[in-house]
Length: 262
Length: 322
Image (tube, rainbow over all chains, first blue to last red; front, side):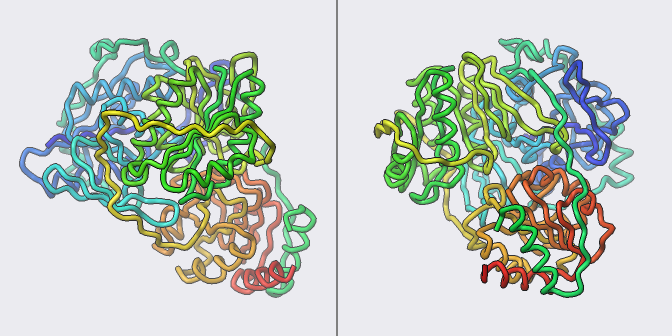
């Protein structure tokens, strides 16, 4: 069985981030790049399936990243994935959701898959829309927000998070599944894994090799960023130390009335 | 693009408030584009929702009560929306930025070869172009985006636009079942773990608990009571979710949801950057913390330094007595 896990590289949430007013893109210089934290749950889910299924089950990591991101992708291999494919190309700069999904779909389709696993969202774009687009472009159902995943033959039984509970879903492979952080606790790469990962293959595919039928990067994008403005920041409000619950309640009620929220 | 299509999310015949917000905004945008505003309502209870939608300024309400929409995940709804989109022609498609809205919207966008932009908080029209504004980078910037495709999908953040009833043509159109489709993601059971009516993304008031809450009970007792008194939802910080005190669906922040309720009350939450990025665009932020030097002190509109276990129940009493 072929399992593919998509990963993205994102700027560290703790880093001080800014936008270049000329290019309207995030200035990545000086900002640490990390594996999207949501993707670690997808990698772990893939590894657990591989351990359970054994045999010739493989876990391949696929990412659209600059070649400089290769060593970060290697973390997934250190966790236990078998190999990685990175699509790296200057032509990909300025990709939007649609071009990104198209490139990933073509790469994953070329590699071949039974199950594609994704994190629910990335910590930078935070849209949560890639799994749905990717599933559509791969021509398979997209089972999103899964917190429990079981496989019996080609049947997938899953629990899918909803706003106030969950749904039990059954589906068939081939399938794309996005997993939430409730599904597992991602392992830390062990020393043995880190050493072993150095020998695992990371294929670098130029975008031309994918023979896409449409342009990529900003020229293929379906959306265009026309303006980026700095949002008004929040300023420090008032602080009141209260002696007891009644006083605390009174302070808040007065404040809410002043704000016309009560 | 000329027309505007809204995907109406509802629960067994009751429209979610965000759907009414979107219906109202769709009419504004359609008017500015010189086109029509359409709503699409699907699944059990769709006719009841359509009746309620008649109070909003829509030109057409497309309805189907096809049982497949509830029996199978996502895909039947996408097929219906696709059919409406193709019949209407180049259009802006509005979905709520909720779990279902994102799932349906992203799939539809890929199918139509449409651009998609998410977490939209402002919509403007410039000739035939629609400009969508979204907070990015955890609310640091406001990015304006426009479409280069015939269709465009915008996932709109709940609590952004006002729902304002006004008369419209409101023609009810029965949708034909898409032919030749088989669906493979079957909903075997629907389990409700919390009686919460609203998700944190949709609630206009969110009462959130963090590490300082100390355990799971308050999420079901006094935090829930305050949320009920204010008509809001219960949220949580990552610390509370990771401790297993409340489910991930309630989590606000970097690895949870990004929300902007009118009022956010943070109880025992320090307000580290990972939490801040999920709630900094809230209208008003009130924090209750025993420590006055926590990071949230720097961006809360009101910080009450005191014992949340004493304050929150008293606050609920005061709100109820109001």
